[in-house]
Image (cartoon, rainbow, N blue to C red; front, side, top):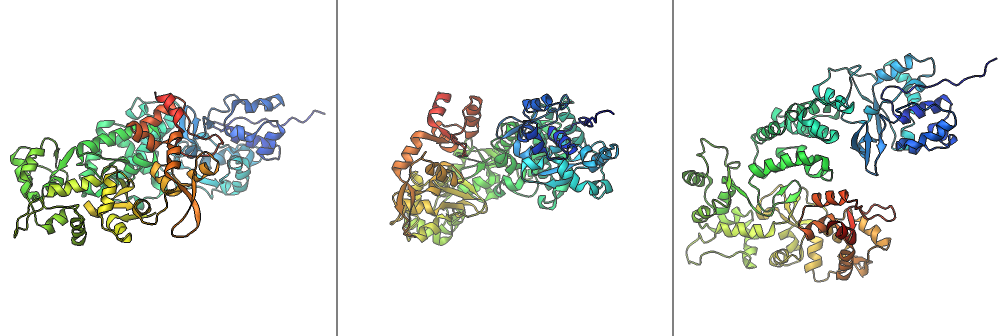
Length: 610
């Protein structure tokens, strides 16, 4: 008689380490977690791609294939994984939904004499969301199972056993499609093959994601709303963006210009002109440096072609000073009719005639070069027209005059045209620098006049507090223009100007002011004893609650810096500061492993930057 020898498993092409260990465990009739413990190792360390996690298994007689981690997501830190030489955010590569090609899995099972679930191997590139098609079978990757817990999610043999009948019967099969150029490109990049194209010079995840964002923006050229396109059609958006991005920066900028030449004006905002693309680069990926080349292209394009001024934003950052005027914004600033102003500017050689140029809203010119000419063109207007120019109702205008905020440029009895549009523009500009973009008036945001009304006062004290820097939470509502767009945080206004407000800021308000969101992070910081707060009575509820007094705030700022306060204090963008701190090994404050957000010790920042 001969001793029974266990069947030896082979590592399948592109198979992940977790898939191999799960199949090995299933061959021994146990789950992967228990199997790893029996082998004196940890399945979690295998999920993390720790190389020495396999050594105990080898010492106990298991054959560990060479290159077992080649197609596995290897943990670099808490937020990043490396897959076959490419870096991805952990939340992107380790999603709760597992996908795969049912035809690949069925082929593996049909060529094995053992149970189907011990033969089916999960492939590493299936973890990459930009991969949507199996190039071997031209079959889309389909959802196989959903499991929010990584420890059980990656025990693939257990899940495959549960769906093996559906896989073998073809129940999970979908409609095949022809591969796109993007499909071939992303697979080649994952395999380590480059064609020398422009996108190859950039990180794979950022480049692929940019293709999807750009493809979404390109839907405007087809008069298709992004909400009409489901996730199952992402492959087409990837291809649309890739067809442009593969040719480089010039092609991208030409395409951006084509998109903004469609119906719409700069006043609609970049989010509407470049749907999905703008939000993706301005907000969704703002902390990822690998997206910076693509942000730079969009940033430079907007800077060179949009008439931005105070109150506008550029990729999430407030615009502090006007560089370019359009015929439309210049007309608002001078009170001159747009058609008449266009003719005057054309006569001065600043813009082309209307027949030769673009629409007034997009016809731009250097504001500084035309400043003297515009000042000479400015004409006084009646109160009604002046109120319309600044975006105020007549009652709002009257209250601004009553509080001595707005004053006529000319005092001439019987003359109606005594208001200077330039004064109106200067009034708005005094409120808008540093204003945050607002898309929905929630969480305490109120129009400035409404906030004043609630406190039974005129707008004057609020405007004075904004100009003095005592009120910092000011917003520019995207759906309105001028004074109608100026919102304030009513809680902050109440604290600063309200008669019964406590001598401190609420935790929520202080967290907002320093950019430490959500406010629960500041509350945890206080409860952990790292920051101080004072118990005061809430004037509305009469309950005792924690407030940040002036002394508490000073103590906080002596010890800590947030991205916002650091940028304001050092006069640099938070992106560049964050990149330099990461490069110098400075980590966010987290002594107890608790997530306090982008919070740094002032001493660490000072040591690294000085």
